[in-house]
Length: 384
Figure 1 (cartoon, rainbow, N blue to C red):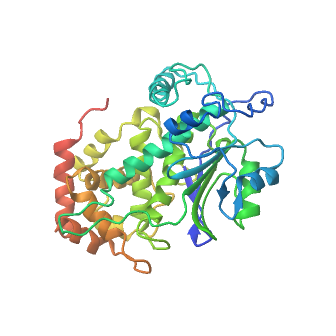
Figure 2 (figure 1 turned 45 degrees about the vertical axis):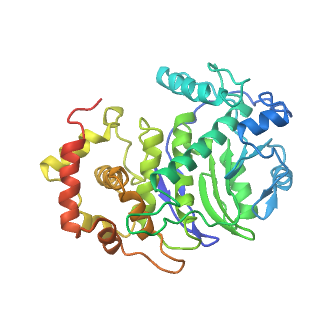
């Protein structure tokens, strides 16, 4: 995964570009039915699903209807949930891998608890079903994010961890083709990007993430992973008010952790453009980190915090970054303290070493030793 950044509406643009071949090449798809076959637009079904609207709805500086009109013949399905406004032009998808089919079966079973017309087993994911899956995935991510970072709770220091302070719901646009996202970003964001894009609209102030399936191009799980990676960064940006500056190790490390927590089999990260993706046998990161710690071959906290950017970094360093975040999130009572220290009032830039000491009570060298001991005590020696 390559992650190139520019400036856009006060927020860094983010490209999670994965050099895969296109996932599926088929004849032009039929447009999805105008009425959702899973809720049929029924008020009770919408309420059970946690939906507020299928549109029209405000979407950044425009509306869903105007966006649809600007994008022309690309049909977009819309849904507004408790925390997100989501648009999707994703095509039908047919899973083929046994493990992918099993994972989707579990997801569809959970979705069918709130949408009874959703089949627990589906041979294909039609555009409406993909919209429902991603709507549920986004809300599950929001809940997990709030739980892991102890948002809104009192820390041991007696201070409440900040919650999102954006006036508008977060926006997500999933497109099938890069050209569709490029048209949207050119018209509304002032920069043309067709792979993926993070943006902050100013009026009303709203955080936006868009990504094209064509740019990811290797399946539903990979797209899900990339969406979690991007949306996590926006969730972080919204904590305690926007804009505020976050160290790159924190923003990218949290995004990497939540993405891998959601889809641990997916081997994507912000790697150098010339590097090949690691083989599948390296998808289990615990024993890899444990081996590096045992051999004393790992990036120190000092070096990690001093790195100006966590984009296009080597595989081994991403292992360590992920594990350091894992340590902060898994230790009881620590996640809220570090979130409190990292999300200071608007206009204040947190210093990593100072924040970590305030949260843990340890200088960086002592924190290095504590993390190393935790890894050796916690992580597996052998991969699954």
